[in-house]
Length: 276
Image (cartoon, rainbow, N blue to C red):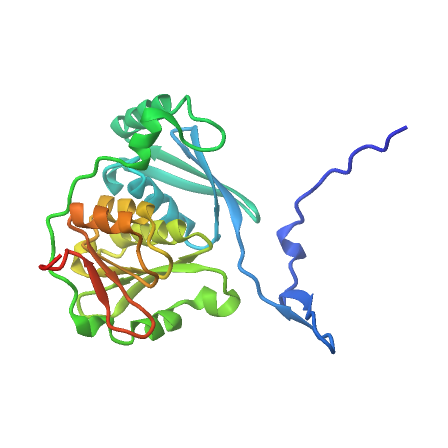
């Protein structure tokens, strides 16, 4: 008689060692030690009781994340469209219940109907392409940040990344204010999540996105350009080189895009140089 299949269960969060996770080095002599690791959890998000998404996120600043995700995904036009936000659960399974304005909810349901034919391996079809390459309202255009505000920025970012110092394996999105100081820092295992958390934190901090600039420690993907433009961020600084498509979209939408290399001067890709 065949044995019943062994059920896989998620260990409780309390099973994590207080001093980190043990490992053994693959070397001679072998050394055993422990290291702190980045945490993550599954966060289910529903709007007006309608399930919308399940995201793997770092469990810090989840309130900021839900607000930023809602804004940067185009699900709401303004933070004022959110009437209530409740977070439930702990450990590896969490749930955000969001109450939004009727107008925003009808728009969300219309978008879901358009994507009803999407395949399991990702978005497909004309409607899905419109989601991947959305029509966005261009920014008004803003002056570039002062070069002095980029001096020593990599080192200052490292100081601001408390989670990364503790465990590594996380990206960061930071807001640098008009004086050149790092005013906000949000971290997550996902680069999109980190930016969403920052976008969600800006309204509560009373900070206008155009009053400074945003830095992402990750590769600058097209999705990050979409989120920055929707959030009305004037200038985006990335620590990794952008792709050609991200530069094209930044220029088309008048988003200042700057790459900050390790060992050379900052490179302004958008706006386009006068000779290009």
